[in-house]
Image (cartoon, rainbow, N blue to C red):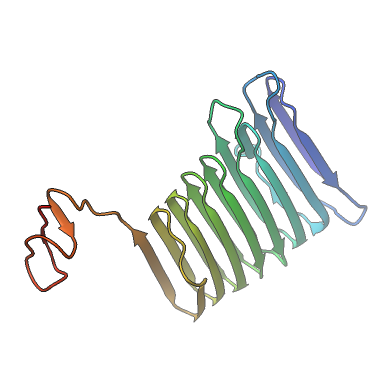
Length: 236
């Protein structure tokens, strides 16, 4: 195992690496950066490459990154040749809870996770050769779960907003699955489940709050264009 660890400032962080004689050719590149504050919580990461061969976590040019306060990540890799990318950015100036993540990949799957904000929580579980799972959380207090199984496929989940909770379950072969959540404060009634072969699937769920006072609105009062629930000018 080849490990590169760089720290900016004095970061109260913990890195735990599991290794064995059979875990040949594994590489780890890690950058942890936090502002120096008395009593602040640093970043923590736990990595297990014990049962993997030639896996690469980050790269020399783009290491795994934990930036800010109190980010936490756990990564488990099993199989041959997996690649992992991670970026956790918590730019809150106060000593608040950071982002949390757990990534588990098996049998040559690849994972990428980006968290921009505070108190985001991500879980990624991937199993399959040349399977890539990607998650983006851009906002605060989002909870996302990505579970994908298959071969030569890509499964992507994005949460753009705040207080979003969602889950993507994908079984894919030679396919691309995209699931996007946008808006604030909503949770679908059930996980999104996709079974697909040799096709691409794109799903978007949005929650946009309309202005119910002056101006355009969706509502049950005021003047409307068409129908009882149509779009129009709702002056209330």
